[in-house]
Length: 323
Ligand SMILES: NC(=O)c1ccc[n+]([C@@H]2O[C@H](COP(=O)([O-])OP(=O)(O)OC[C@H]3O[C@@H](n4cnc5c(N)ncnc54)[C@H](O)[C@@H]3O)[C@@H](O)[C@H]2O)c1
Image 1 (cartoon, rainbow, N blue to C red):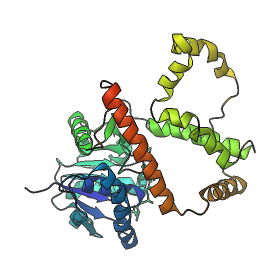
Image 2 (spheres, rainbow, N blue to C red):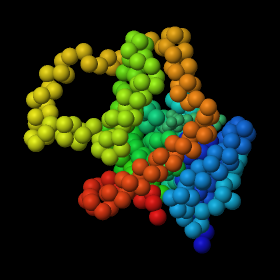
Image 3 (cartoon, protein in one colour):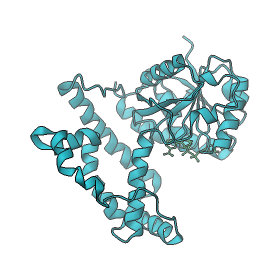
Image 4 (cartoon, rainbow, N blue to C red):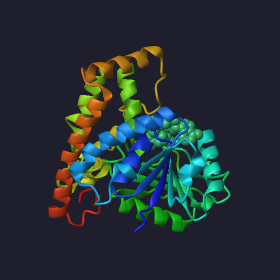
């Protein structure tokens, strides 16, 4: 049987993650990057990802031989059935590359962009067939984390939203359809709030980068692996749940407990961030840290999967990452 071809456009951190996920699920991947060096790194990154993916179980057709790399866009789009674009986060670059792709491939083929926060209506605006252009925003490492946010632009068709959801489910993901087009979508808005607050805490000399990280890793982060912020706070309210939580902590919403606007990114703050995280990384380089992160994620995901299947069959957060 002929295996499905997907095109991965831009093969940096995120493009490599998508390529690894599709390969692990038995697809043929045609990857394009204008930079030869990125394509060389891609092969190495996919080999690293496969070490983790093997632990989850590969599709019977999965093979690194199904990876084809190109510096010519037309070649990477030949006979494709789906395009995932991962070019740098710039409205100008995305608009141009989407327009070029839209001109090359048949109008039925869906084009998803991995953008972290750009509005799909803007980046689809130069396309002849904008109804097949939308956001599919994943999370790093894409080959392990199930979440992907789908955001439609004004001209995206509902049918294509449904088709994309089905495709992502087929490759073991948990698609979340964002109901209203908004910059930053859902998850990045939440992460961004935490990130800006962390920068303020460091900028104001309240804590080091390591202490800020410990404040999440040993506390809320452990809960967040299982429950989101809303359900967690429902439990914080004791027997009457969220009702009591709101009564007790409602007034605190008026206290100066957060400064959501980002601080000025001064050289002093940049230095504190870079030297702080370098110290935290210690003797480990990025690749070694990524491998450790993957091992932790797999253990946590196995635990979640087991609990969801055995104890919460109707939990509604099921995904099919494990064989
Ligand atoms: N890094 C993350 O954690 C993360 C998470 C989710 C989404 N994203 C989004 O994914 C996209 C890619 O981010 P990344 O972190 O992989 O960036 P990256 O810098 O690692 O990779 C970008 C790649 O795009 C290539 N490129 C440059 N111009 C191009 C063009 N015109 N057409 C195609 N490719 C081109 C570069 O050579 C490079 O290999 C961005 O939109 C980003 O916002 C990133």
